[in-house]
Length: 363
Ligand SMILES: C[S@@+](CC[C@H](N)C(=O)[O-])C[C@H]1O[C@@H](n2cnc3c(N)ncnc32)[C@H](O)[C@@H]1O
Image (cartoon, rainbow, N blue to C red; front, side):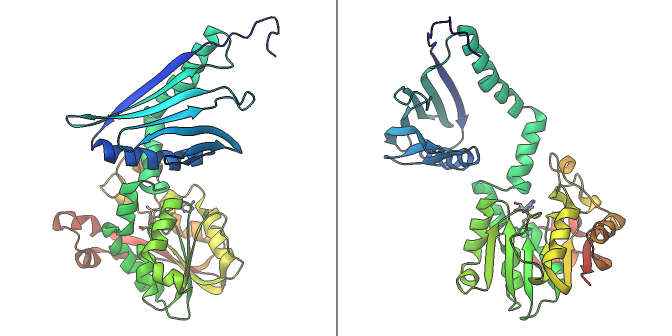
């Protein structure tokens, strides 16, 4: 409980932070606003960018754009306290051209309303501003962020580009397609579809398909990559988690995953979900997560220490624990497919070892 004898005497400060980034102010402005929109959404704040833009938390309008000058500045009137909605502070982002990039300066002026003791203000700044900055730049959190950004929950312009045409994944895609032996009668499910490049190949068989991914950005890219099939009703792509598939029991004849197994925190739970949505006699054909790749350019740090790698016995055990039968581990070099996928010669040795594909069926 607060001490009622203490007079309310708001202490105020100006919070300033800045960073420099390569690119022109116009480019950095666009990327910053796009990234903010995505990240704020994850944190429960909805940013509507633009000259009449605003920021909403639950139903409360936290910010209203006052100045919107693309490539230069954004100024927002901020309401830090929903319990005192008339109180305002001012938040600005300024984009300044440097010789070799752009400096972005964020300033929050008049912050501190509701705090009446200077030591509490310092406590808030240390705990809510400085500590998260230190944590997010220390190895554990930064390694997690990089792993999420690049593979576990891909996001950002670079990931959207990479996964719309993941050249280094095509060798495995070709092997999976071959092992799946798809026909027009198949109803295929892909879990962790990324940008939808594998789906595009698989749909050449004439099959119908559905796919899920828990990255909203990947779902958008996959829908764009396969627009025609989606419009024709041959393909449905949903944002969902591998452990809670949004499909009825016994919906599919076959299911697959490419470069996903090693990312799953509970692979047996995910495989059990696949088992549930397969019809009796249905099959899975999954790319493994080969220990031979740990620490190579295919799975470098910080991914390497955050992924799970499975040898053949491990893979077999995962499938059996999830209820599958007729479990088989196919071992095959991907080298011929690497040549077909135009992988540069100096990287082809990565594909020389015998990769693992898990095949199994539901009785
Ligand atoms: C390395 S990417 C591979 C994407 C695609 N299969 C390919 O080979 O290009 C892994 C994908 O799995 C998705 N993913 C990882 N864990 C998932 C989960 N628990 N549920 C749904 N999707 C997941 C990620 O969002 C990402 O798009």
